[in-house]
Amino acid sequence: MTFSSFLKVAFTALSRNRLRAFLTVLGILIGVGAVIAMMAIGNGAKAKLEEQMNSMGTNMLFIHPGTVTSGGIRQWGAGQRFYPSDVKAIKQNCPSVAYAAPTIQRVETATTGHENWTTQIIGVSPDYFIIRNWNVVAGRLITHQDVSGGALVCLMGQTAMQNLFGSEDPIGKIVQIKDVPLRVVGVLAKKGETPFGQDQDDCIMVPYTTLMRRIVGTPNIGGVMVSATSSKTIPEAEAEISALLRQRHHLAPWQPDDFMIVSLNAFVQMKEAATSVIMLLLGSVAGISLLVGGIGIMNIMLVSVTERTREIGIRMAVGATEKDILLQFLIESLVLSLVGGILGMILGSGAAIVISKVAGWDVVISPGSILLAFTFSAVIGIFFGYYPAMKASQLDPIEALRYQ
Amino acid sequence: MSFIQLSEIKKDYYLDGVVVPALRGIDLEIQQGEFFCMMGASGSGKSTLMNLISCMDRPTSGKYILEGRDVANLDKNSLARLRNKTVGLVFQNFNLLSSATALENVELPLLYGGIYPAERSKIAKQFLEKVGLGDRFHHYPTQLSGGQQQRVAIARALVNNPKILMADEPTGNLDSQTSEDIMAMLTQLNKEGLTIVLVTHEPDVARYAKRVVHLKDGKILKEERK
Ligand SMILES: Nc1ncnc2c1ncn2[C@@H]1O[C@H](COP(=O)(O)OP(=O)(O)OP(=O)(O)O)[C@@H](O)[C@H]1O
Ligand SMILES: [Mg+2]
Image (tube, rainbow over the protein chains, first blue to last red):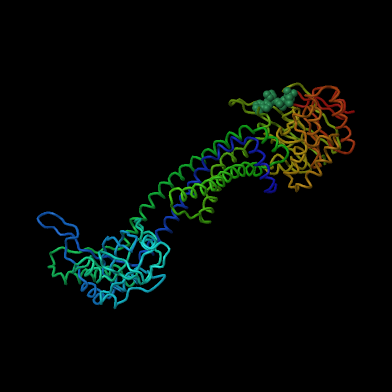
């Protein structure tokens, strides 16, 4: 008997009882749908996280003033302050550090002649652009001369530019921040959101010296931003910076650090953990539905074998072998589970697309997940269909013919 | 050598641990081209013997030679092969697949004989025409009369060109006129050279046969030849 003949027999048998067949495949449908949706969401989240991490910069470390315990009270950020000289020292003395830039920023209102917009004012040095892998789309970056001279220049982030200048070309125009007039020399490329949902384009960048002296009026900086020479040297860089700062801050061996070094990789791990919780949840739903679906198929196939005992007897009487009967029922349950699987793929992909629209999550439907779902349903069909098919093939032809 | 040769055939059934002897030593030979009939009271073992000869079942003991092969020791696959190619079966209650058309029913043995679809329907149509149902290909069994259903069953039994046609009370569910038509058809087939083995308890039907054997309590009582 050819495979196509088996398929035809299976489809004929199933189409005789369409509603029952549909109800039987519901479990598989939901299970496969959940697998597809799970993988689409998981892959999407991963892709988005990677993109966001790359937008933040690679191999980054942040150094902040640490907590200090005085009189039993722990105070955040009350540790030793940082100065521009710390940045220079780190860059010169730590071999695993490729670039270092001061971090200092304030929220201030910037005004043009007729618009004003409250935004992040970020103090930068040329290293900042390398660490954050950020460039201008128009004009120029902030240079060493701008920094050493405390030049009154600034760069516009895309969001800030939209709000201050609309569609006008801002280059050469003046913005006022706290009565300090700054000339726009460049427009920054679009960056998008951080993994924490912050709009990175809502900013104006000025030389950090200008921000310290002219706008804020402070001798110190917020902290230091560093990029390690590679992702593998992040721990070394951390150790080197720690040793250097302890020395510069004159800390005795028993004293705790008065600074904090935070690696971006820690955030990545946290975010990945959150994603994998969702994946695990959907995965359990998928697993349970597939199991229940498989049992449903087995149940209905057993019923079907009993109902069709006479049919089996007739087929045997005209020459069907045990193998013919076994394959007939096995293919029938395979068809059931694959139909469920295909409907599940459609449903799962649909759900993933709806989720991406409604929740704004990124989803990626990969050919791999389609293949996986297909394999899953085929394996379930064969696994749970085998016992009923075996039972059918073992019937005695005379008794089967006599069955009422 | 005879086409069919049974010697010392015994068949026991086991019912709740009690042995029910259905056949108690049958010796029988059937030649090719015979029109052979078995008669006997209900429970005398006619159907049991039919099932053994048609390779649906195996004897408890004894020797059964079909075309020179010892069938008693064949495995299930070989028995299925024989039912497909060598023996054609016709039943009292027709045993057609109710969900399949006349044509599909007749195609069934070809399906298990490994014939390809196009060829299958061509051959099946020829045989349906041969039994006078050329205009009923796509009717379902419930849309056919009893006599027509039995003709479909006969077409199905013949479609693989078997060496022997076995019919267990083929007219048991039919009126006398239809019975005569069916028997006339079997007689014609026998004239064309087909070996026919028939079970009946109607003398009217038995008279078509050339040799009649009477069974009683699982044994051959007597034999008549015409
Ligand atoms: N599956 C079975 N289990 C137990 N006993 C059986 C079975 N099949 C048949 N028998 C017994 O074997 C004997 C012969 O039965 P068989 O069906 O061959 O009779 P028969 O001659 O065909 O009768 P009928 O004319 O009524 O069809 C009977 O006594 C019957 O009860
Ligand atoms: Mg009988």
